[in-house]
Amino acid sequence: MMVDRSNLSRPRSSQAHVRNPVLALPSIARLQAMTPATRAELRLVLLDLRHDAQSRAEECWRRHKAPMAAYWKVVSVYAGHLSRVLR
Image (tube, rainbow, N blue to C red; front, top):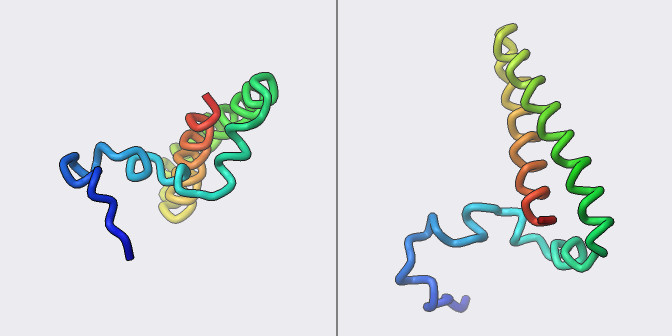
């Protein structure tokens, strides 16, 4: 296993793939290669999903449905990560 020595001087938390684990996916390059208009439309869908999932998570938490609140929170986080890749 090769160690990337260029990142050893930086804290792990400042590395892009740690802050946004979606960047480690092989298919991300295909998303970034889309036309700007397509990326913008997909980004809007993901931001809508993020907002909806955040609302659902808050509602589940208020109703003491912690497992579902956690599920929706994760959906919102990953939708946000993906939307940032499309900027």
